[in-house]
Length: 441
Image (cartoon, rainbow, N blue to C red; front, top):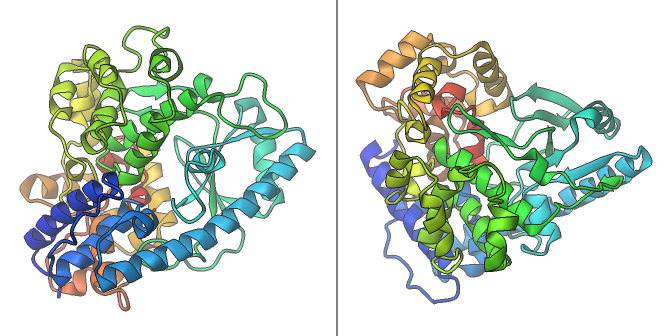
């Protein structure tokens, strides 16, 4: 039997905010929280979905036996998995060199290449690669050549998985044997929530060479991390690891380079308005990471409603640690009345590509399969969400794993003794096509 949902909601809020504060105050010897067993288990769930379990293993001073054991196991699995990812990147590099194909490893792979993280500190759910649109066909052929097959097409990328992979693993957090998927991008873009922000030109190297290429600069990488965080912030899928990535890299940026190398004010006026909410969130939890002048300059470019709301938001409120689904997530990110109308219209009558993404995502994530909500009519889902609060199925799945790790399978949720609706954070739920699996990676 699961505890009452209100108890879970409060426990996730307390543990998420405590973990965020603990990670930001690394090395200060904070006292171990006096939590009960349920709260320690919810802390494991929160650490897993926010991608910081292995980091906490090294940096958290909390001395609780079950907590320490969980963190140590997570670090071992992430380190083992990191070696697999490194070996795969080497294969991709060699294959790309052989066919004169430039590729850019994105986000986590780039941060590891810079030495910002040691092996075993930062989980990587998959490998993200950027390729020029003209080279997309060659990149697809390369991935097939190393034993990968396309699993589904998302509006932001093509997803590939190892051919002949076995059944996915039902585990809490990271596992060494989880297949390493590859996401192939030809554009770097996000929907916020309906307007598409594209920064591909900032990410592609000016003189690419065959094989794996780095970002053009630290500022280009930071721009990508900020846009990625903004997309997740808008969709209520922000993770603590996103903030930690930005905080660590931001400390390597000279204060004088923010305008020219990160926010690139030479672009059209107001082009970087979307960077303000994630920067404010980083500054909230990592006070010395962002120069004070940067958010101050962006405040005049940000839409007034979003600027006001982002001043007081917490990590819990814009992440899957907020247990309840929102009917209109990300609406405050709309900049014009026209965007508001488009956002509302997409919620009521999703376009065909959104419906297709929903089907593909359900097929790609085993824990979404067999859930009646995924096949319910849009009318039923809308009416249900207008009449009562619905918990996020991704977070409920992780909570159930944390409370009953030996027995939890997707079909167990409704057998747990609660009226937990089959609510799926699918594309229209996320507001911008966000992959619901993000909350579990």
